[in-house]
Image 1 (cartoon, rainbow, N blue to C red):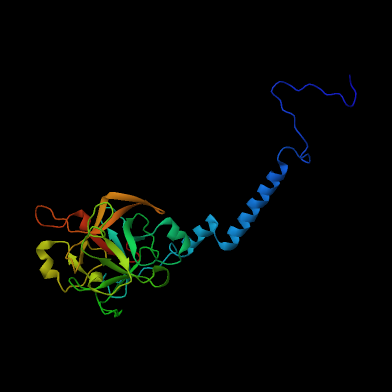
Image 2 (cartoon, rainbow, N blue to C red):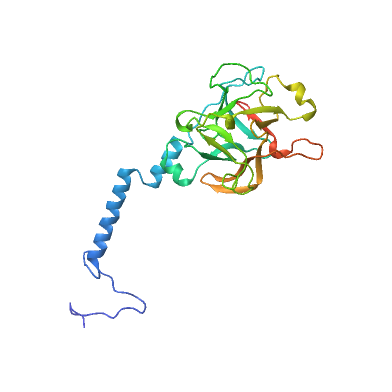
Length: 273
């Protein structure tokens, strides 16, 4: 039969399709669900809760590019210089470590803030430090071996926090190595005072009082505990910026009483990577 109302049998495995205007099944629930999804998206956009907006917050605040101090002809470091602290053995840079939630919600580093050694070496508020005197002044004087100083993050996004350490306790220690922890804190006491020591222990006393040169292998010593800043390459953890290495304050000596690779750092300025 070829009448208008004749129903042709469907092919095996085929399903009957309908015009989009035909409402079948739980159509009212589907329409309401789509409206709820659009409404939820608009609310998140207005509140700045979209992932793309949070990522933009990270890029414009904590990962924005900063300028390091220029390299001088005599390669001498001065108080007030903006530097990176680079670990010689791994090529990583001392950086603030913040959680993914903090990275997406905050516009600056908060106290206390943990530290790690990161492969992200581009200067940004996470890893740029300013050399300050103990009394807080930024006098343009050379930094010498054995001279006390404070390392602070930049104002604004950096939070102007000081590099801090103390003796290890049951509740205050590095999470994996259980060694003395290193943090950034908004304090001004003996826990934030450091000094630079010569890498070679045989001429360490002779080098005291001489200017520290950019790019030279050095020891960063904590004055209160007399322990050295160390990068623990064997202890790594995941962060929003990739795998990074744990940082602690512990002296590692070989059989000749010389500092080992975890304690060797160098101070980096612009045009000196």
